[in-house]
Length: 143
Image 1 (tube, rainbow, N blue to C red):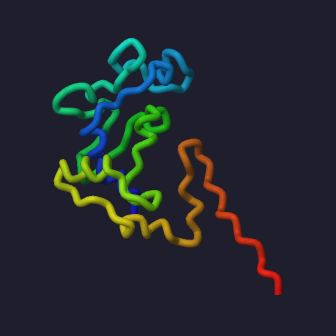
Image 2 (spheres, helix red, strand yellow):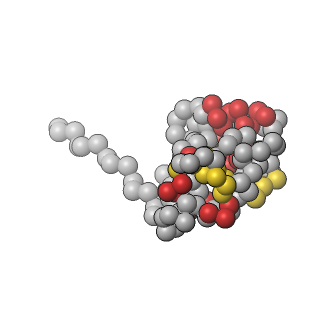
């Protein structure tokens, strides 16, 4: 089963994506591609398409509710990294829920993440290609 975000993309059509200009690749190597941004104010940029009506981030490649990907996922702004999918980390996300409902999609539940419950869940690398470390085992109980 794929990650629920790969069949959603709703959050990228609901919120302005504003961030400090230092996150841009014009200031920081490997940062957010400057050509995909526009100036919001003296200190902030925003992703093109997110300061308009209707909102749709220029980096979104999606058919909402069917397939979705961020074309700059590894270089996305910090504000995008901070939006969690509901229940991905054990709690609901108001931003995720609101965006999904706006597109007529059901909100995610804890059950949407059961595909990760397999004991052998070390094949889901992070953005840097690193596999997560296994959880620490509790100390043995003395007999």
